Image 1 (tube, rainbow, N blue to C red):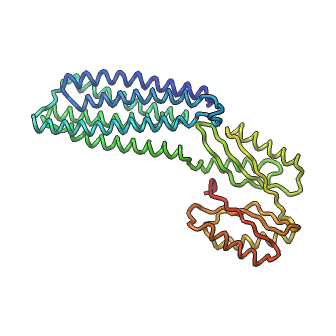
Image 2: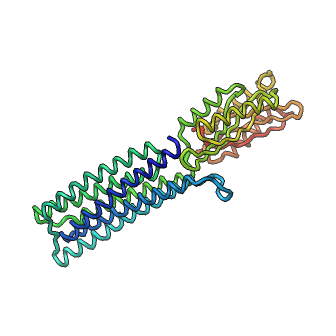
Image 3: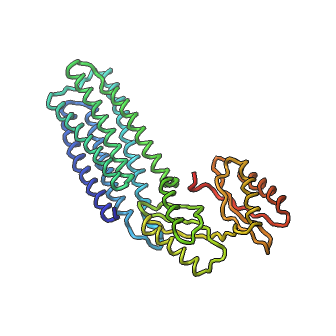
Length: 375
């Protein structure tokens, strides 16, 4: 889905959410004030925060599609993550208010013996409102997958939790109406805790996206496979991807090539990779070059010795970028070491020492690569 169509889909979905939630606010507020039910009034307030979250989503979507400029050359795509944080804050506020008002309701019941007075039509209105809220939640979740929008996903989760809150309100209404027992305050506290838990989950996901998540392993595998299919590429390594919003990635990758290629041949390979990444993966990428010379017997013996030395370390994930310069007398290669390894530099020094003993005439240069996309 292109960005213009995606923006229209998100805005249309959000407008539907605003209209539905405003109607729910009106109906619930009417029932709540007539019946004297604090839980229904708080439920109406919760729907009002949902309408506000849809407004925030619209604003965030419009801002995120602003063109890059001198101040923000990477664009404004990450505003969508901030939008999700604001929605998480609204969810947490709604949960906190539900608990606060429920506690007040319980205290008032014990002190003054107050009980809400519900009519049948009030129960019917709340039941219909629950069905509408479930429909909104499922609709938003479906649209979030279609548009890959964290903000819509957060709003969808919020709507589904609201339907649970409204269900508890309905249970309280039925028990109060037909059994004469007061339960709505206790149910409000329980559901408020669930709403807060949902808000924390949305907040964690949004903050994680801002900090920088590891990209999907299948996507990384597909990218490397596509790059490796380009003529002249002998392997792709050190793939790093940074997300700047939906379908806005910037990254880098190293490729292995024969050490006897001309600069013109290397440039042709580089151009093919950058075109592939931009057209298929919406990624602006920088390509680094590893010249490889493992064809002669001496180089292969050295390389096999390095492989043997690395086998003893379970947290070494890969060796690449191998090159032997027989004139300047150095051996250069990169090691990818897992984040699980607590002492990566000690491993590097140990391997450097072993390789140096086996090749005393050479300087050993080992570059430490972190596991950005392998595991």
